[in-house]
Every structure is written in structure tokens, then in C-alpha cells.
Length: 119
Length: 115
Image (tube, rainbow over all chains, first blue to last red; front, side, top):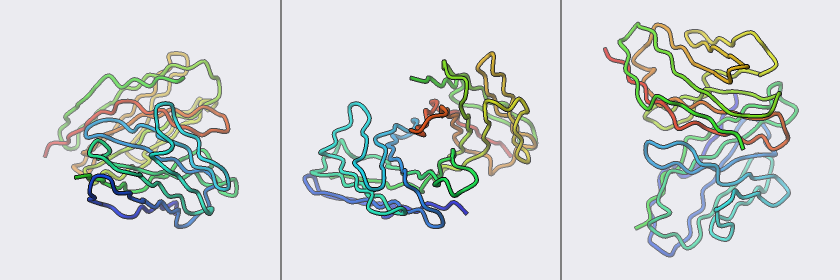
């Protein structure tokens, strides 16, 4: 149980275009999901908290207009990188926290990540 | 803000041997959770073990165990009988007992298991 998927796993796009990444909790509901960014051989940096039915909460220094987050249902959150530039190239990881119905609610389960390359 | 420190960037261990990864954290909270996550070359983050701060008993999951020292704010991970599949980056993480559920990660320790 507690499986999180991400799509696509890899994406290459041209500079100036927008890219959407999906994060789905497959076997549980998640009111709260998280989006992270990870550079090679570095730790995960939290970008934002995605809440179903409300606006995302962004960490300091993260541009909310550039990284649009939509949490449309209890199993789906999307991250859209708008007007992507080469410096946005990175590994993006989502995680989901099971809702109160689950026995363990303090644990986040991670998606497999999306490698974004902006040319 | 919580700070999580992993002072060992890299560690190498012979197959079947034991390796211990260190993690210290800084917090003024009394109730919180601690985690070890593993990130193998596939980059999928996998939960290895979790510990609730109010529990004095150290958590154990098969070959993985922790030494939780609350007063010292230390949370080390011991991998026993190391296997080649244990080769990965290991992250220590902290979550305070609140309604934001945010994780603070350490910098990570790369573990290489040698055949």
C-alpha cells in the first residue's frame, strides 16, 4: 500500500514552454501533498505544500507564479513549471501524506520523481 | 526552524558488515517524529524507519535499527548484515508534531556496500 505515482518520469522541453507534472496517490486519499526539488547528490528542498481545495503554500524564495500548483482532488496534485528556463532543469519529487482515515498519518510517501530538462 | 545534520557525506561498508549513520537535529519541540529515508540510484525515496519522540524504545525494521537519544538530539541508523541493495543515499528527516507535516531533511549520506 501507500503508492504514489508521478507522470511523466522524464520530460525535455524548450525554453519558454510550460510543463505539467502529475502526482497521484494510488491507494489512499491525501488532502496534503508536497513538492520538492532535488539537485544531483543534494538533499530535497521543499518547494510548496499542496492542499486539496485551497491554495498551495509556498516556501520562501519559491516563485508561486512560476511553479503553479493545483490540488484538484484527494488523489491528484499537479505542478506546472511555467515559461521554463534551463535553470529550472532539475529532479522534481512529490510526496503525499495519507489522510486521517489511515492508521499512520505522520508519514509521507514519495513519488518516483520527474527529471525535467529545459533546453 | 529545525536543523538536521548528517556529518558523514559518504560511507563504505563490506557486504555482511554493519554500518552506522549519524544524524543530529536541533529543535525546541518536545513532540516530533524522526525518519530515515533511503534513495537508491533509481531516486525513489523509500521509508526505512520512523521514530516517535515520545517513545523511548528504539525502532527496528528487520536489519535496520535506530539509536534514538532524545536528550542528545541524536538519531543514528544502524544497518546490519549489509547487502548490495543497501547501496543508496540515506536521508535523516525531522517532522514536528503540528498540522503542517513538513519534513526537514539532512544533507544525506551516501552508503556504498562493497562485494
